[in-house]
Length: 229
Image (cartoon, rainbow, N blue to C red; front, side, top):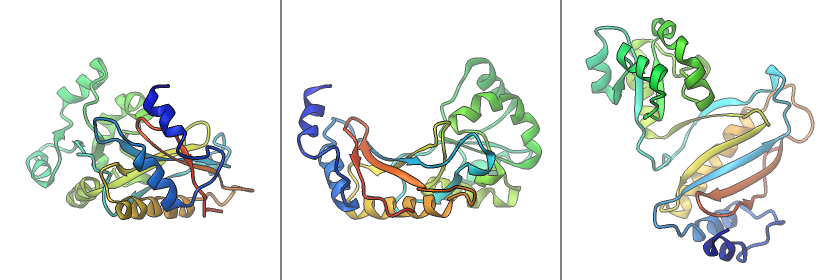
């Protein structure tokens, strides 16, 4: 632990659950790195991730975005490239790009979309994209017909975030940047809390959210009072 981290620990009680606004202020005040730190929320869920009917995966539109410039890779059919780039895509998933991902592990992008016919080409690199949350998926709204591409690109650029539980039943989701206003962070966080609540599996029993923690890139975690049942 560095001195800045140890000093941050002195500003709050690690065993206490703070109201949302107070927790955000503590995390934001302690984000003192020389770069604009990302603020994230982490949910410890009461799901059993071994069961397919207890997976949590959905998307949410953050009212104020993530504060990050999103680079989008689009897998589209021949003849759709120019229109897709004009609509906001940064990279076209050509055969050359697919080979670069497969052979070199190239992953300099933040999101992917694909048209249904292109999924046969994306399949061979699923083992690379999937574990990193970069695989196009119909449930996440990233496998779409050509007519929907401009809308999806616009939403991704504006702050649409996909989240899914990891193998231990946790969620890790960006809320925004330390430079955001308190109101912007709180509105983004409330949107995430609402989305997590809406994604609760019907088969899940007992406490759904067991713990909710806010943290910045370089700062300690602050527990938050959860309103999710």
